[in-house]
Length: 259
Image (cartoon, rainbow, N blue to C red):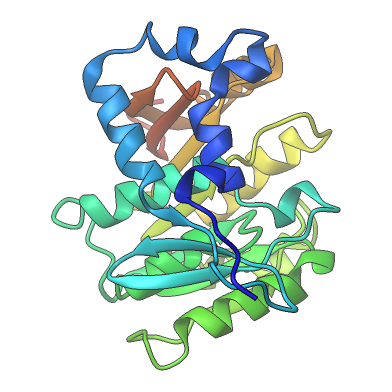
């Protein structure tokens, strides 16, 4: 059965096109306050989304990155099993900044990997990737990563359980943590584990590890977390997307000298 549709019916595109909806402001009015460059980049990001034209037994959403068609199955019963705009922003950044952030043969871990989209893109770009999340999300995460990376990647990505702040020394001993990059998209929101998240960032980092972190600002908690984060890490804002209320950060662990 053929389903007539367009990119603009994609649910993630709707989230990107109407960011003002969460603020009680009409989306077009909110976009009018952004600059042309921001709107152009957001449009380019939206263009990476597509919806299937055929109705299948398993629903999925589609994305174009690194010359590949990526099919993602979401779980609507959990925040962590949905592709959020921050993930798309990070994927776009990784693909369009390969000269400055080369993933080839780099050791990469994603925390809060969710559906696995960011980890898939990093794998397609040539990285050794470990995608992590809570145990209840690992089945769907593994499914998405396997279907989109098999026979397509230089290094086969791994999927591992990581509950923030729990059994870190046992499951990720500091002596074996040798990550070049930590990737994180929309890991800060209304949950009670922000201190555990900070502990996890700190545990996984060595002095040369680069954190690429995309964050959507919703509540005052996000601002407070950024302030707390700056106590342990040197934080640099790389990009800002006002129409999405999203910022992209680069961070590295503070050295004794910088502290």
